[in-house]
Structures are given as structure tokens and as C-alpha cells.
Length: 169
Image (cartoon, rainbow, N blue to C red; front, side):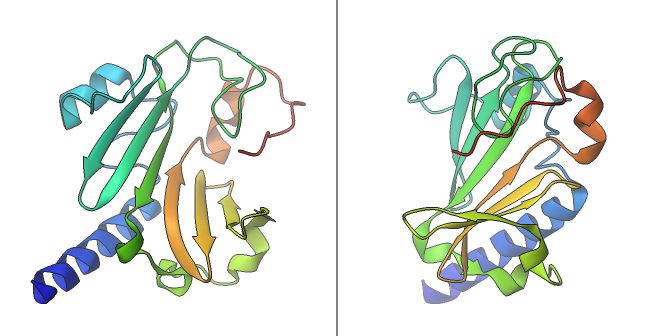
């Protein structure tokens, strides 16, 4: 059992880090993939999903895929709104790792990660936002809790308004 857990955790870390380098998650690319693509690749979501998000439990993680509700919608948190893409296009993919599988920030292999630090919230979670690659890492006590795959710097041309500040979650 313990060996299985170690192998599973190691595989998840390697998959996560490799996917992070690819700027996609399991073939899904924010602002380019659609809900139909998601369901073709992952099947039907969990019943607690809603009209504009699909939830899956995959490989020791809770995966929440959020979709654009309408073109150019403002007032939404993070990278979820203000995009000139059709409704039901993937806005971002949040991979929340189950607590006993959190891994050290150092395992991300990002030199000088403090350069991409975005903020630390009142619950002492620190968020690192790699805007170039469209990745956000949520950490606590030096351990990675989740990885969010969102629009990359190259996707900025799809923004409806360029002067809108990014709303924190």
C-alpha cells in the first residue's frame, strides 16, 4: 500500500511538472479547447458540476475546469473573464492536489520562484503566477496545493479590454 502511494505520488508530480512545461493539461489548452473537447477526453463530469464548470476526480486530484460564460464578460476572478472567445471555451483548469499528495515547491524546478510571487492571502496561502506560461501555483508552508492552467502571455491578443486589473480569488 505504501509503495503504491509513493509510486502514485511520484507519477502525479512528474505528470504535473511535465504538463506545466507543455502549457496544457492532458491535451486541454485554455482559450483553445472547448467543453466538447473536455468531455471527449475525460468523459462525463461529477454531478456537482454546474453549467460553466466541470469537476473531475483524477489521479489523486480534484480537477475543476471553468468555461467562458460569454464573450468579453468583466468582473470575474482570475483569468476567467474578459476573453473574446465563444461561450463554453475552457477559461482555466484548476488541479487541486489531495492534501497527502502535496509536494515541495522546489520540485517544480522553477529557479528564483520569488520573481513570480503574486500574493499571500489571509489564510497564509501563497500564489505564484507565471504569466508567460499561464500557470498559477497555490502553495502553503512550502508545499504545492494546486496548479492552475490558464491563458498564456501569447493569449493576451484575445483579451477584450487590456486595461482591466486581474481580480484575485
